[in-house]
Length: 483
Ligand code: FAD
Ligand code: AMP
Image 1 (cartoon, rainbow, N blue to C red):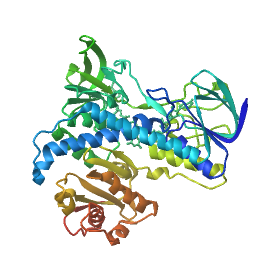
Image 2 (cartoon, rainbow, N blue to C red):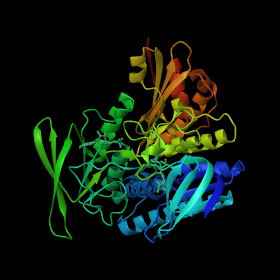
Image 3 (tube, rainbow, N blue to C red):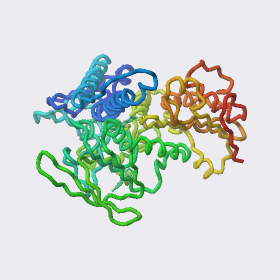
């Protein structure tokens, strides 16, 4: 039997469910197909982000941060606690409950917006049809005027360290440890490696991060990355740069396995043994079985579905958005693309501003940035002013005993338009968001400087950094001009 829809969406991750809900709101008859099943073999919505990504990782980051606070910070505030212990299975169970609440919430939002959901794997069989194979092996055909592919991404595996999801795990397995590994290895000092490494380091694991590249966090402003390396090292993360993993060997009995990792660095061949190893070397677009190549949907050289700025593929009725297409693999980027596609189908002139996609690393302190960094501006030959304000001079940060890091604002030397904001510090993600809004309105550093900020807030650090770039911060802060 064939069912007819205006729009069929494949995948219910952030990109897919945003696209489907917006289509529903705009009056399109809409279907959303999802193949993800939880441990009980029930279909769950929300994709990587809700099930094994943004949300569960943040749940564990929040728990482990509270643990550190209770162990080390409470005493500074005069709060005496006798013994602080971590119940790892309870922590994991709480994380699972948060995931369950949110994934059920997405199911409710889809039905509330009149989106029909289908459990199973979707395959595009023609520019207007999608075959859905359900978990029981039954197949159904959906016919649609428009198809939106939002199939997301999966972790990259590397031959030297095959994942067994027990001793050698990917990011999904790293969210499921039932005890704190004594020795934990992490391959990859990217966002996911640093976040998951931090979780287990805070809970007591001896963490070594092996990173093939020589530079730490190459996408991050150098001043901020340098500060981050200093802070993470102080926190106990051992980050080995220029360390390329070439092999691994499992040893020990069934119950107590360990893994010896071989890697090369500037001193030659090295070995290190861990109880668990997290492979966090990036993610790749997931297009397996989505369509036959004869259909004519083009992939780029890295396997992403080729789309234009508005997420249109080479076939007029088919769109693709989120991690399965070019651009940063971030939930919010996929969400905005999903909404853009839905609105374009309704004839609206929606756009995504790819110049202002914010990035965050949810360590503590957080690292957040948007726009251009100093290195990029220098390479482009653009003159700029920089204002830096350290949290050590923020009354509110000191009151909270959380004053590491800085806010850095970069503005065009000629026009004063804000070109970038780079923060390492408490609540960096939320603080940076204020500057994203300012930048969306093409604000100048002076505009931020003239805005009144509540006292005492962490946000004042943003204000002072803007003032610093103009050369007149009140409390402290320094200005540099590159002309
Ligand atoms: P996905 O979320 O991957 O969803 C795709 C969905 O499509 C899946 O549910 C999949 O089952 C389904 N699907 C695929 N093929 C088919 C098919 N043929 N038929 C039916 N269904 C199909 N991003 C952030 O912005 N902030 C963070 O803090 C953050 N933290 C992260 C932490 C970790 C550990 C990880 C792994 C990722 C994190 N990310 C974060 C990245 C974020 O999760 C992704 O960018 C986001 O989920 C991409 O959304 P998407 O909708 O494109 O794809
Ligand atoms: P990201 O793409 O931000 O998730 O980061 C993944 C990181 O893993 C990158 O910085 C890569 O350089 C790193 N990486 C990839 N392969 C290896 C390897 N074999 N050994 C060590 N690091 C690696």
